[in-house]
Image 1: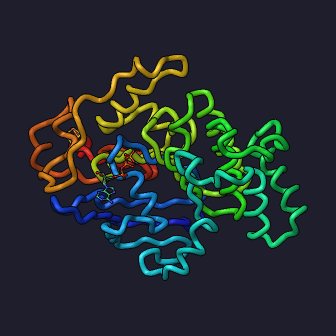
Image 2: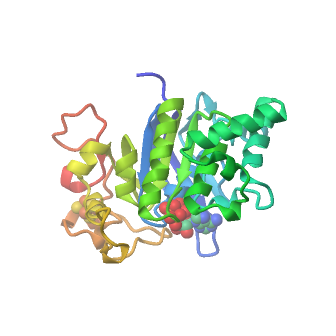
Image 3: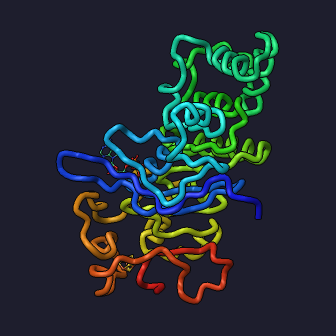
Length: 325
Ligand code: ATP
Ligand code: SF4
């Protein structure tokens, strides 16, 4: 296997607050090759903070630590701010939930792509404009000329997100971090946007980290999935194994709450109980108060992410749960 692009070992993100330190990300480790990795979990599980730490966009009251945190041989903890600026938006791009916050509201969508292309590739205006239209077509926009001349508020949510994806592809990034890129869209448009992203990933060979709470959407997109709970990765598996045989009780519940395409959102049953606040954490498994399969050890001993007992796979499968010790 080729050298991973990203090596993350024992990553933690801690926030100073007046109530005490919040341990938002706790001991997260993974490697990212040329693949599509999904990170899934409920709100507050630390998935966004993991993505933001990679770009060193953690808020000022936060601190990031790791045993290893390398992107293509660059130590992300030691890199200068100048080096990080070069990485952000060039080698690692981030697509956020709402394109409204990323697009300039008073500039036509196409002009924004053309201008970014011109600056990045040092081309003339006409070449940049032609390339912008090609890029709009490549994200499956059927009337690229019309969209080119539209202002962001004139675009539908799905269209705006495709424009953003086109913008993000301009520097030909090595990694795209897509943080809930479609959660503001309806189910059908969500799938279309994800298909677009998947197709571009295949064409360009970029790696993608897709962060989200919808296991169904992630399952349709990712090669590998990591489930996060209370700041930790608790279940990591190739997507087929995760869907067919989820091991961690939390993953099982996340999969049970995935609706079919035809089902309406309001019929969804969530996972009972609430995730813990990440201050003054107790010992044991933090999922224990919500876990239907808990055993006495669970409230005393913290489970470690490891290959499940009896696992005959190539070591890709990992779970943090006493049921598999
Ligand atoms: P969401 O879907 O809500 O974005 P998430 O899994 O992405 O969920 P994170 O944004 O990663 O969650 O946040 C993890 C934890 O870190 C949360 O408990 C959140 O309150 C806390 N947190 C994030 N930013 C700060 C901050 N600047 N100061 C204090 N706590 C923070
Ligand atoms: Fe449930 Fe125990 Fe496994 Fe935690 S360690 S998920 S409480 S069975």
